[in-house]
Every structure is written in C-alpha cells, then in structure tokens.
Amino acid sequence: MSIEKAESVKKQNTLLETLKTTRAKYVVGTILLSGLGIALPRIFHIFAGSSAGATFLPMHIAVLIASLVFGAISASIVAGSSVVFSYLLTGMPALARLPYMLIELVIYAVLLSVLNKKFNSYISLIATIILGRVLYAGVLFVAINVLGLPTYGISVIESIKAGLPGILIQLACVPFIAKFIKKGIGFNE
Image (cartoon, rainbow, N blue to C red):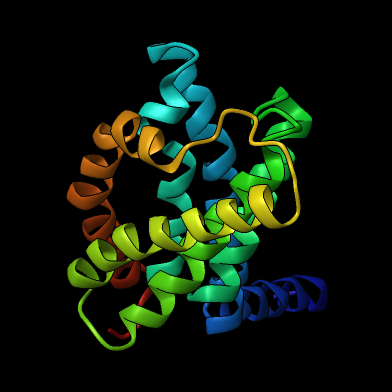
C-alpha cells in the first residue's frame, strides 16, 4: 500500500471517528433539524395551501424534536434558524409576525427541554403544549398592553383552535420520531 493511500485511509478513519462523537452528532442533528424546520412549512403550504402553517404547525415539529433529542440550545438554534431562514427564503412568516413566531418557538424549545429532564417525553410534550401557550399569551399581553406593539391579528385562542390538527400531529409523532433518532444515533435516554 502506498504512503498516500495509507494517509487517505487514516484521514477517512479519523473523519468517521469524528462524526461518531457526541458533539458532531449534536451539530449535524441541529443543522438537519434546522433544514427540516425550513422545509416542512414549504411542503405543507404546497400540499395544503397558504393556511397550512397555522393549521399543522410544521415548524414546531422540528423544534420539538430537537428539544427532545438534543436539548434547549439546539432547539433554540433550530427555532431561530428556521424562522429567519424561512423568512429570507420564502417570505414566511411575515416580517411583522417573525419576532412573535421566534419567541413562541424558543419558549417551546426551552420548556420542553426542562420538562423532559423530569418527566417522560409524552408528559413533557403535553405540559409544554399547555404551558407554552400560557407563557406565549403572557408575552403577547406584555407586547401589546405594556410595550404598545401591534398585534398583527395574533390571538393565542384562535391559534389554538386553528392549530388543533398540528397539536395532534405533534402528540402522535414527535415523541416517536425523537426516540427513533436517539436510538439511531446512539444517544442514551
């Protein structure tokens, strides 16, 4: 075997070993889930129309999975990158709603990560869906009534009604997908 070929094999083995590390799995997983957070809303809008985001909450899915698999920081990165890059690439969410969407998703990211350390993923997810909306309502209250910011038609009650199909999808799929990913990449529960 030539020296160049031996060096090439050594570099490939080093790369494979690096990709097997927890840090690499974390970084690659966060990037992939960020991409999913951008792609899912587009897919839902193509197949289910312009109101699909409010109905099926596709961006939430990537954030919730990241939270269960990698934790609050990863999920917050997924939330931020999904919202910002989705806006830059597609114009959605609308610029006026972008900060609200970002805050909402970060609330879910942090809340689910914290709760998942104490409870199983199903209980954590249910509690996050409830408490997250309560906290988000508080954020909206402060934004509108204390800071005097416009509402842009945002209503927590209306978003819950419209998003019931998405909430059901989250409850049915997110814990299973997160468990599958954790097992697949070798993360301990």
